[in-house]
Amino acid sequence: MSKAFNLADLFEMVADAVPERAALICGDARASYAELERRANQLAHYLAGRGVGPGDHVGLYLYNCNEYLESMMACFKLRAVPINVNYRYVADELAYIFDNADLVACIHHREFAPLIAELPDTGVHTLVAVDDASGAELADSTEYEAALAGQSGERDFGLREDDDLFLLYTGGTTGMPKGVMWPHKSLFYAALGGGGWFHPDGPITEPEQIAGRVADFPIVGMALAPLMHGACWWYACIQLLAGNTVVLNPNRHLDGEQVWDIVEREKVNSLTIVGDAMAIPLLDALAANPERWELSSIFNIGSGGAVFSVSKQEAFKQHFPNCFITNSFGSSESGNMGFDSGEKKGESKGLGNVTPSEFMNVVCGEAANYHLAAPGEEGIFARSGYIPVGYYNDPVKTAETFVQVDGQAWLLTGDVARLEEDGSITVYGRGSNCINSGGEKIYPEEVEEALKTHPAVFDCLVVDTPDERYGSKVTAVVALREGNELTLDSLQAAARQHVAGYKVPRELHLVTEIPRAPSGKPAYPKARELALSGDFLVS
Image 1: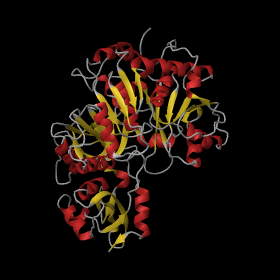
Image 2 (image 1 turned 30 degrees about the vertical axis):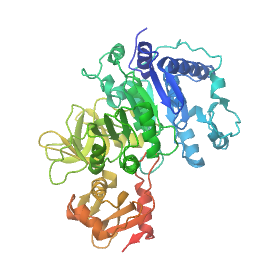
Image 3 (image 1 turned 180 degrees about the vertical axis):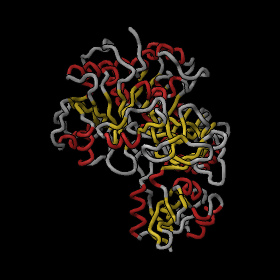
Image 4 (image 1 turned 120 degrees about the vertical axis):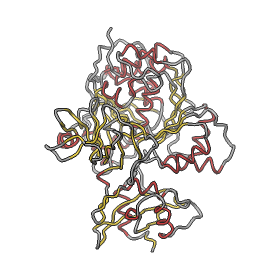
């Protein structure tokens, strides 16, 4: 049977190559590649028996667990589409995602059964509950293990295709979540490295080559974001398609000491985080517990999806001098857009400088008059080639984000960037968050990185607030380290060491906790709301 660049086809070839190798570890739960393959087949047969087929959408409403990835693979085997559901949603948000995503089935942790039962009629005909310690009443759900019981563990499914869909819902900073529609082949090359992350020959060119990229010894990799977040979901896929071992964080909250306990116990080699929000508790745990853990297995710490400040990268290097640090750029819509080269260019340094590639560029201008940037020109960081086909059920947003330039389709990431004279690209941050103060453009992420060099700053966000003279002013919302104090003058002095004077905050608001999504991404609207309230202003 011919193979496609479908994630199920690719995974099956890897599982056949290393059936006894450890595939998944989540707390006490462990599964080899053969076990993951068998259980995914069993669930796929159960879902098929319930009428789930090609193109049908299946919600994954789960905390981190092995069943999450079993369910994902079961969907792919049927050419169905798994949908990530945020486990922090309240009733209205949950009803929206069930409706907008057109779910026909949902696999959920038992504790969510009462919330699902209260939803209006959504068209979902199959519910499967993964057991937990909640003891919640099950109404219409079948227990997960009961669903698998008696089902065939064999793979006897039909042909799959390159353009079968992977649908990732992304929350963004405003509005309801949007579903990014990725064809499997495009996702494989744009976000998952094309099978080339761990091999000197780079991406594969034929599906059957994937098994040949499996190394003799697996890399044990741990991603700290929830699987409902694309950064963790995709990292898990990268690991599984390389025959490596995926370690998941079984805890509901990120606790630095718990993470290092797992890293030590499982001899984790590669740790992937989402920016400073995850870096800070990990570094604090190391600082508070010198020499508590034996962590020599670590050789890589990487970040993607949020700002990973230079100060936090340097702090990790102090603890892991022989470890290489990676800081990647990308989004749910773009996949991986390259890594910071470490060389920030020009007076306006931005968040980092990305080495050029054939699929990246900077798009300038407005709709109907877009053009590719000339060296020195500023516009929007963009990707061509392997890109999504749009947003599910949102033609307006699709038309705004996926544009034609010189007869070629380009994805606009929303990040402001500049094409440098040497062809590299400097990335500044989200244009939608840009602060215009007296005509000067200021990107919050760059200022936040500067503020985090102050020893009293635990976490921070930078927002705009009204200013009579300049229209908007740079305002810092800061959470302090325990036992520390901070004045606006002190914060400004630290910032001036790293950014131009017009970017320095003019107001300081001290809060107990910085608002962030479960993934660690910043909640800028909430931070601005805190600042505008005036309740936390430091004079």
